[in-house]
Each structure stands twice: as C-alpha cells, then as structure tokens.
Image (cartoon, rainbow, N blue to C red; front, side, top):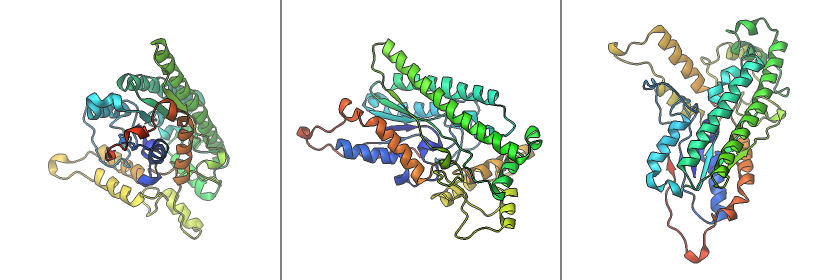
Length: 366
C-alpha cells in the first residue's frame, strides 16, 4: 500500500496507530491474512504540483511540518524511484490533495467571493487531481486507487462565543473588504464559503475519478479508481458540539475572558497549544525547521524574516481543523466500506494452501 497526499492522509496531530492509513492497513491484514507493506510519502502542507525550479528554502523529515514540497506529484516520483521495477506489486494507493492548492487562508477569508473560490476549487480539485490520477494509473498498472474527499471546516454549528469572534476578526484583520463587515456578516460568509468548499471539492474530485476511469475503459482496461466522500456533518465542524477536528487546548477549567482575548490577539506568540497528541514533537520540529539562519553570509532580509516567523506560527498550530482520533476513524471506516467488496475480487486474500508469507517491515518515508 502506497500513501500519497497532504496532511489529512498523513494524519496531522495523530500518533501512528491513530492514523487513517494505519487503521486501513491493520484492517486489510486482518481481512486478507497477509502483511500489508506500507510506503508513506504523504506529508503536511503538500501541494498537488509546483512550478518553482529553485530549491525550497525550508526542508524537514517530519511529515508534521507543513511544507508545500515534495508536492504530491513529486511524492509519486519518489515512490516510483523507491519501487523501481517492482511497481506492479503495489496493490493499493490511498491519495488525497488539492486543499493546499486552493489555500486554507482563502477558505477563511470573509472577503473571498464565491465565484472566484469556486473556479479555484474546480481547477485544483478537478483538473489538478485528474492529471495526478492519470499519472498514478499509468505508473502503477495493478493498483486500485482510493481518493478521499474533504469536509466542512466551519458551519452554523461552530461555537459562537467571544473567543471565536476574536479569532475570526484576527484572521480577517488584513482584508479590506472583510474589515467593513460586522462579525455576523463575516461568520455567515465563512459558513457559506466552507459549505461551497465541501460541495464543489467533492463534486470536482468525484468528476476527476470518473474521468480517469472512463479513460481506462476506453483502453479496454478495468476502472480501478474509487472516490470516498467524507460525511462529516455541520455538528462535526471546527469548535462545534460534536467536533471531529482538533481544536485549542482549553484545559480542565474555563478560561477567563481576558485570557481568551490575549490568546486570540497574540495567536502564535502566546503560550497556547492545540489539543492534538503530537503537538510537542511538532513544535520542536517547527522550531528546528524555521530557526534563524546563522552566519553573516546568511543574513535574512526583513521580508524573509517575517515570512519565516509566519511559517513558524502556522506550523505550531498546524493540527487545528484536522481530523482528531474519531475523525480519522471515520475516514478509515469510509475507505473500508469502499474496499470491502474488492478483497475477494482483487485476489488479496492469502492462499492458505501456499502457507505463510515472509514478513517484511513497514517502510516510512517520514
């Protein structure tokens, strides 16, 4: 099994045994009686594709650190290099991608217009994913491919308290159009944009899958790409009553109104953490990745320094809005529902007459 994609399939904020791909791996081993050898190329922040020819300024071996590269197309290249002539032995590929190309900041921008956002989503999640899937199916001729969708980030069920209000205003403080809005107008716009994101991304990804399957069938090849829609409901969105997403760690007691104000207005500098399970390790990796360069020949410009500090802040809070343990479990269950019928059809069950197969280690890319 090969895992390509962004922070969702990487499993942002989750311990290995909580991640979606790990749950799918263990389930397949139980159902097939065979070991599932796994290669994970997915990482946080990955874009579908990139056009820059200059080396990236920042690098990390920790998939928790959100970086645009390796892009998902580059992840595919890395996997091809790893498998080499054995690529035909890959049975299953889990892949997602396109939210970082759309850019989460645009989904949280109350000044963004629906038509502009719809076009950006359609281009990234439709054409961008179609191009990637075509490459995947051509590169791995025997693999079934599962493409996972996304979910609403903000909904009418998202908590409406003083902290959330300050957070929304902070996120939109530099947008001229948003600053003209009342909080109620900003909230309604963000809810609408989040709903648009869910519906258009789901439709675009599904269309990309159907298009690639159609191209395979035109070549008299079996359709082997599956789309998995993720049914998170409004009450599962960020800071909602039954959220399935990582939030801020509020502790065992309620914060004072003053403390909430300090957190919201100084987001990124206050000693405050998200409530995911690997935050401390991620923060250490973030600090190492985005540390100030040393030496007089490596002095930063003011713009580079601001960019580095902004990236560091985003990295520390990268788990916010990502599926928590229960959210990852629901992703895994949705994938398993699509794969159940394939186990027998694809011949994945171990032939008991051949005896046990040799065990091979799981391979991690990060």
